[in-house]
Structure formats: C-alpha cells, structure tokens
Image (cartoon, rainbow, N blue to C red):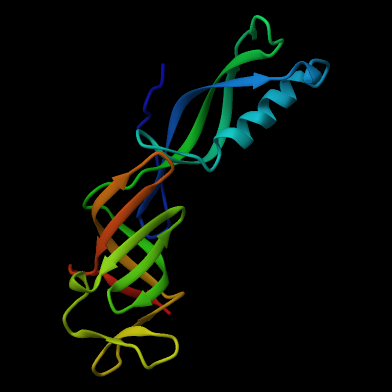
Amino acid sequence: MEKLKSEAFTTNNGLQQGRAISLEHEILLHPQYFGPQLLEKVKTKLYTEVEGTCTGKYGFVIAVTTIDSIGAGLILPGQGFVVYPVKYKAIVFRPFKGEVLDAVVRQVNKVGMFAEIGPLSCFISHHSIPAEMEFCPNVNPQCYKTKDEDVVIHAEGEIRLKIVGTRVDATGIFAIGTLMDDYLGLISN
C-alpha cells in the first residue's frame, strides 16, 4: 500500500520543494528481456515510466530515489508478458493553496503573466499583480513595472508568488498565483 512520508526537501531559502513518499508500480515486461539483465531492465523501465509523470493524488514524480523491492513476476496468460510489482521511493512535488514558491516568468502580456515552478505552470492575472505595477506593451521584452522603474518583471525574471488555487487533470496540475502579499514579487531579473 502507498504510504506518505513526512520527509520534505527544501531549497536554501527554506521553501519546500518536494516530499519523499513510498509508491508502488507494476512493470509489464516483454519476454525478449528475460535473461541475466532482467532486474536491470525492470529498474530502467520503472525510471522511464514514472519519472516526469503526474498524478492528481501525489503530484509530479520528480525522481525515483530508491527501489525497495521488485516482487515475483506474474505471467499474463495467453500473452507471455510478465508483470512485476515494484515498491519504490520517489520525490514528488504537489503544490497546495497558500504555498509560497519561487518561479521563473515565461510570458508577460496584458492579461497577466505565466510562470513555471519546475514542471508546474502558473498563471498570475493582472488583477493579482500590485496596482502600482503597470503593463508596458511597447517595451521589448514586454513587462510589468513600477512608475519609477524600481521593479521590472519580464520573461525569464525570477519571482516569488503565492498559490491561490490549483486545477488537476489527467496529465498535469495547473495553478493560479498572486503577487498581492508581503514579500512577494521580483527576486531577480
């Protein structure tokens, strides 16, 4: 059974980046791989099948850290394929409402900006950007900046944002963020 561990991984600024959890996965292996390298093939297939995937329950599987056990294979009747149950630990990333995260701005336009937090895409509406910042469409690259140009947010800039909502679908998690709180906004250009 899958168990959630409490171990969290943080960046040097103290922001949580992921958790280590125990998971299970079934590997379907073709008979051509039966031989001395069988267990290596099961491990390789586990890495390729689960790393980079997203589930609504646990979020993005960033990396498999350890393989705890590879169970006995079960032959599928009439096919010759074998199913191996694998128990492993992985680092996962699932954003939560109210969480403060660092992001990289990818696109800026009049309706807001899009940022990436690792594999997570986040939209920040212009209504969630401080009122003293205005959109500048005639500047290259387009940006949001204060009147005194003290703060300029453009594509590839680093910002700190707060998650105000998430949407989960079959292939990913999407977030809505805000810059309207203390200590949020531009980190570096």
